[in-house]
Picture 1 (cartoon, rainbow, N blue to C red):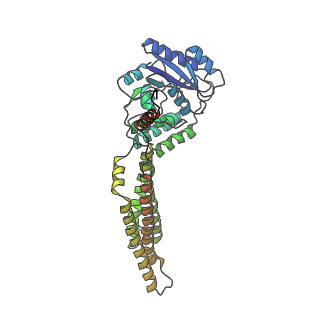
Picture 2 (picture 1 turned 90 degrees about the horizontal axis):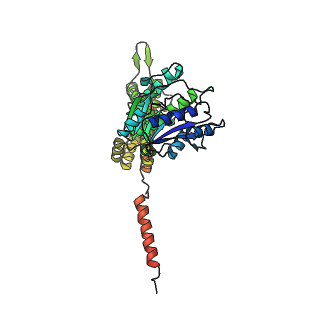
Picture 3 (picture 1 turned 120 degrees about the horizontal axis):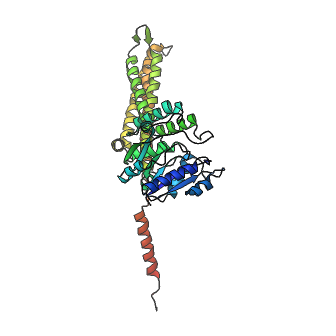
Length: 407
């Protein structure tokens, strides 16, 4: 079977029959051998029987959520290719041929683009059309090496085996972003075709919740991009703190009538510490995600981890600790020079703050080196070849212990 059209369904009695008939008619018209699978997520309005009467196969998915319903339908699909789309009659299931042609041409994932194909009046709320979708799609393109213009189009086609290998896990609306992000990170052939969006045929409100589901999409994009979540903000914060701290260590800085002194130096120290911790978190996340298979291995991070060994990390942390302790000893000497009496903060803090910052960063470096070493411990994983070899050995051993015939 070449094609399975999967439609998630939750109380779509008004439109599901129309969608099924359109998809089947399209396949008949173009000579495509295929089926329609309705992934029912607990409908109570008779959608299941209406879908069966129209010619679809219905599979029940107990776990609630858009992503869960779709994954249930994809697992049940018998086709080499799968095209997914909502069962609310907002997408034109008579126009599936461009997706099939791209899949036949070798594409792994073919996304619909509603902004290129056309959005009918009233089909998409202004909040989604002019803010939500454009902004989230821009963030997706910024965070990941993708050229997809519409990250959240619900009509898309893909090779079933390619998508199953991605290990998609999200159960809600963010499933749409997860598919594009993981396909991009794994280097799959991702393409885009124009598609149209029409007002849906339902009389009830949609299941989508703008702010809640928008946040879930944004959260997913951030969590799958340690570079933008941790590294770039942390590096910017640490750089600014270092520049400001270096300038203020030698005396106050004046910009016009504004005077920046030791109180700003304390703030700069906090920026350095927080920024350094964020950069370390980016490294932790990259190593952990690569080891667990959440993200593909980053060769630059792997080279960095290979270069910065535990021993080198301990040495670097030790040197920072020595510098910090040296500064604290100097500040103690400065205090002794004042007879261990009252100090002038504008003088003493210029020694204490940089020294304490170096001391804190020394422990951060040491702990980071230890933690990365723990993350780098590779677990032995039994491969299919190992399993087959073990089974063969067990079978051979069992045969060798069987008594000979006639003995």
